[in-house]
Image (cartoon, rainbow, N blue to C red; front, side, top):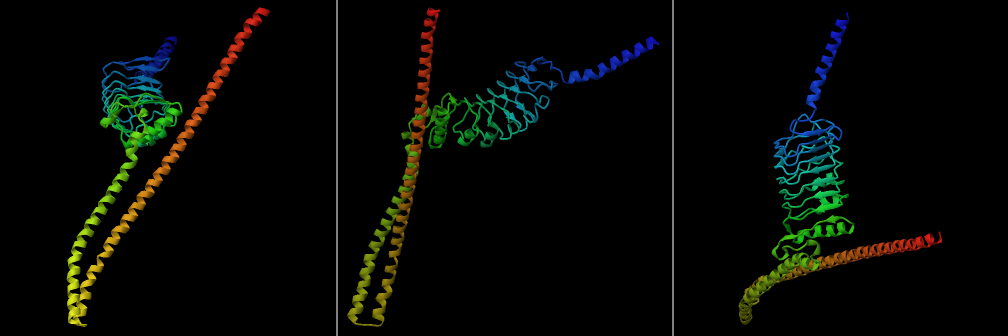
Length: 382
């Protein structure tokens, strides 16, 4: 009887082990990686991997996959580890990422895709992630970032975009990243033309608020090459505000020259016609005929009078265009004045805060000095 019970207990243990063994195999540690069950860190660095390892523990919080040979990320590539907080995919050969590759990673905070071969990012890639605070996209081949991706970067404090192929960057995207503290932009072929003025203005505000930035060196045009965008004076961008006006004035001058040429041509043509008109009139008058002789000259004079409104229309058009241009110039001057006043106010506020901080620092230094003087006296009295 006892032997039967013992065998039954052994069978139960074997059955439980058989049931638990597949679970441990399916959610254990991949043979290509090393795992720490206490810290929930999976380290797969430098293992020559071509794909994301399988059978990952769903409790994994850190996954390190840098220095491998991964070329792409498919749909829901990390569905087995929905609680991962740190995901490092740097120094691989990633050229494409599915828009749903990160689907389900709602607690992801740190994402590194640096040192890969990415040319573009889909605007839906970071859509479901609202906890991201560190995003490193440096050392890729990105030509730009979709403006809609800014909605997913609201909580990002570090954004790495260095050493890509960026020539411009949408200011609206950067304005959406309201928590940004550190930004890297060096190593990009920035085109410092009129289109980059909005970025320059945003960078000034960002730095004034205490943001950290490396540098933005211009690559083109040639006269701006190797110049730091932050240090280029606004006077060098004055052509951006006057180019459109020069174009309008050129059009006005062109229209005016055409009008003068046409007027000169019409004038040259008018003299013979008027001469020919005067001749019939003189002939008619010489004949003294009031009928057909008098009607002929009046019929010939009507076409000559119809040419005058043409010149009048050109004159009116010139006046209208000139008025429009003058209005635009006035508006631009007003905008420049407003901007100058705003900039002066900001700088004044900055100077006041700086002076206030210096006074506080001086006061604190004086308090420390007084305290240091009191200590020897108290020791001497004691």
